[in-house]
Length: 104
Image (cartoon, rainbow, N blue to C red):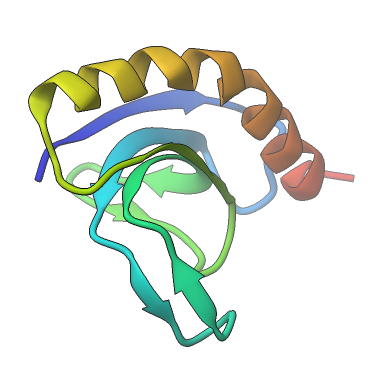
């Protein structure tokens, strides 16, 4: 499936050099970590990462995600719509990740 990603350089993060902001589709289903069900649809995700020459490293379970659009299946039209919707929520998630991972 498609994934829309962008990397934002940020110097005030502990153990990370950038923020990865991505919009993606997931089929959803059982979530064994939360003991719930993840809805099928398009999500916005922001997480701290360290970019190397050919690698991207991150800490598991770091960052935040937000359901943008719940759907029954993937479509390019809905993916484009999810990217537009993500602009409304992007700054809030970025601020939350920075606050949680800021150097003291």
